[in-house]
Length: 214
Ligand code: ADE
Image 1: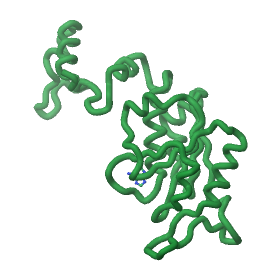
Image 2: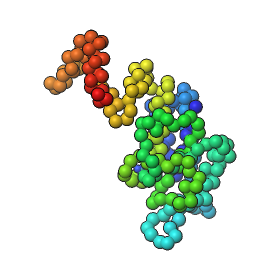
Image 3: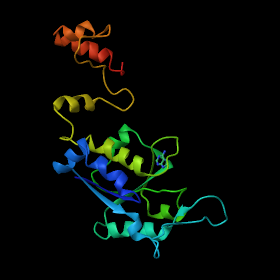
Image 4: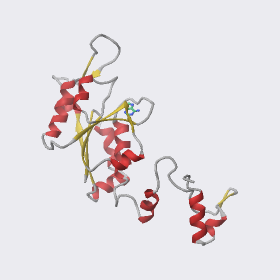
């Protein structure tokens, strides 16, 4: 079983995706569990502040250690085995192999926001993960991408056997052979003859040749 606890200042941005389509199906079937923790609940003072200006000067605000540690420790108090993931553009680049090999267990995804975080937060982080060489405003989209890419691989989450079959040889870059559905002719763009032939041997060969692996 895999469980994700997402620590975020914007649970309202994250929740709808987890309540929709395959992520919701995974929850309903008991194949994955999601939990949202509002970082604001661990903020300091009457304003529940979570950030402050950087020592040494500079623009912007940084996430402070205290609320982040308190939020993570509150989750770990219930499950000391939980591992912490930090989405950050300077992390290890995420890919299909990493999604496939992430072991079952409980993952706390800490979503940073604003201009960054106090470096000491890294002392409580197990995995730093980057979604690519670009910068987003926060960790919420990366968290959802990580979750989606892992959860869709759990047997029983996607549709019929076919999806898992395709999955078993897919590896991120060129996932599948080209596929077509009705109509046979759309604005002059025709479905390849072989796919209409009913010849399963020839179809398999065509798919192999067009799978992007050859
Ligand atoms: N936070 C901001 N940008 C990011 C990225 N590219 N990957 C992961 N986390 C991020």
